[in-house]
Length: 353
Image (cartoon, rainbow, N blue to C red; front, side, top):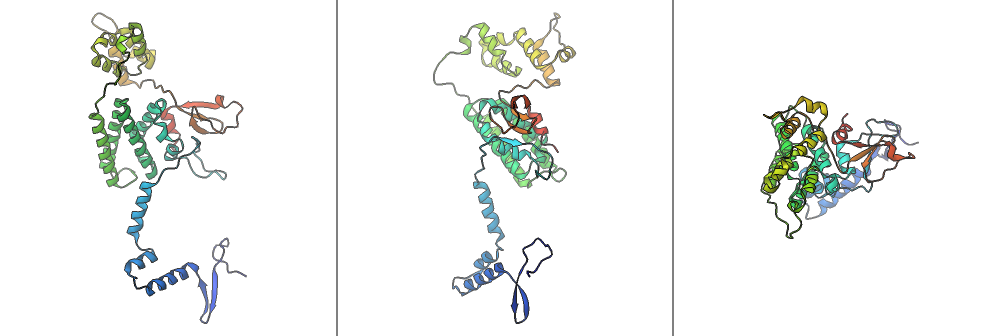
C-alpha cells in the first residue's frame, strides 16, 4: 500500500529501506548529489560551478530573465476580440484586465490604421489621466510600447502632432505627480523605472518639437486652387476649431474664409447642444453673435462631441469586445443588432472593478 501524505490527492512519496530504517527517496536530490560528485572529480571544478549546480547564482538568473523579457516577442492573436467578464465563476476563472485587452485587441497594429489612430490616442490619454495606478507591470510595458509606435507614426507621417503632444503632456504631468508622491499612491514598479520613463517621454516631446514638416516633392492641386464653396465644405469637416485657426495662420489667402460666421456657427451646433449655447451667448458691439468666441468659450466649459472613423464594439449577448470590421463568435441570428459602439471612456469603464 503506498504511503499517503498530508494531502490525500498527492501521489505519495517514495521510501527506501536501509540498514538504519526507512528513508525518503528523492530523485532530484540524488541527481544533484551525483552532479556535485562528478563536478568534484573534475579538475576544472571551482566555486562558480557549485553555485550553478545548487542554483544560488541569483544575479545571473535575474540578468538572464531581464534579457529574455527585453527580447521576448509579444504573442499576436489571430482573433482580434476578447471576452469582457468581471466575475469569476466555476465555468470561467479570472478577470479581464486592461493590459490583456491591449494585447488581445492588438493595439500595436491598430495604431497604424488611420481610422483607429485618434480612437486609440484618446484611450491612451484617458489612461494617462486616471488609470496609470491600475496598470500592472506587463500592461505598463504594453502601454509604453504602443505610445512609442504612436510617436514614430507621427514623426513619419507628420500628422496629428498636436493630439500626440497633448497626450505626452498629460502623461508627463501624471507620471511626475505620481513619482513625487511615491509611497502615498499605489504605483506598480520601481521609482527608477518611472524616472526613466519620464526621461523617455521628454525625449519624445523634444522630437515632436523639433519636427519640421517637409513639403511634398510633387506639385499638385492645392486647397487654394479649389472653388470657394468647396473650400468651405472642406473646412466644415474639421472637427476642431483650433485647426481652423491654424489654417488661417498658415495660409493668409484662406484667413478670410476661416473667419466666416456661418462656419463657426455650424461648428458650435455640431459640438454643443442648444441649451449649452444659450448659456454661453457672446454678443458683439453691434449685437451680433460672436460664434468664434462662443466656440472657444463652450469648448472650455463643455466637452466636444467625439467622432471616430472606426471604434470598438461590444456584443450585448456574448459580451465580446471587438473591432467593427472584424468578426466575433456570436450565437445570435442577427449579431449586428446586439452590438453597440463603445466610446474610449466606456472602454475604460469595462475594466473598472
